[in-house]
Image (cartoon, rainbow, N blue to C red; front, side, top):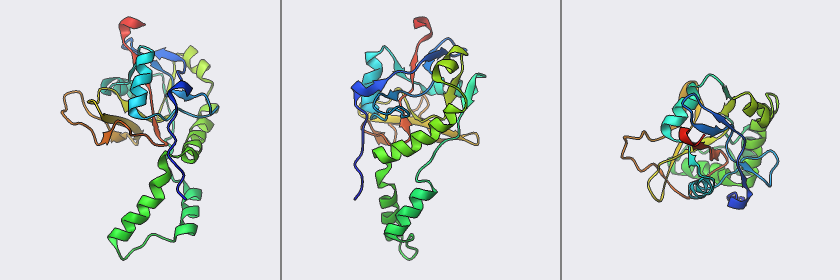
Length: 213
């Protein structure tokens, strides 16, 4: 049985501490947190993430802000966690067999079953725990904020500015390249997803303009 998707409720979302970027914009030190999971990020849909930001006078980080974050000297770059991990893959193979080789159609169906739980609470718990294991070795969020430092690669960030009903994602960055590149400001792209999109790896990172700091 495929575990159901688990979207964080807006009332369970928490803003982390914030820091200033060189441009003067204020950002959260990590993605929004989930009050019901001590070592968990919030995993709302894009639509819900935008709504939560409005409640706090914030916007999802923009394409340009994300570029600034990855160039900032005080960033701390985490190692992205992609699932399924080896243990999850082995368990799936034991239950479903090895990927079929004779049929492209059957292989696509096999891969679809493998990735079906990616928005589930189980996958969120596994992915978030692996990121927090890294964070705990570096320092608390309060300590990071006090030193003006912040994390990148904590989640794949929802990028602000998507058209109504659509979703932009920009992150993670691996070997100098974004897994999902986002949508530049001058682009007319509507993005590949609708605003109900979320999974174990997506997160809501927020910014406030320089004149609000």
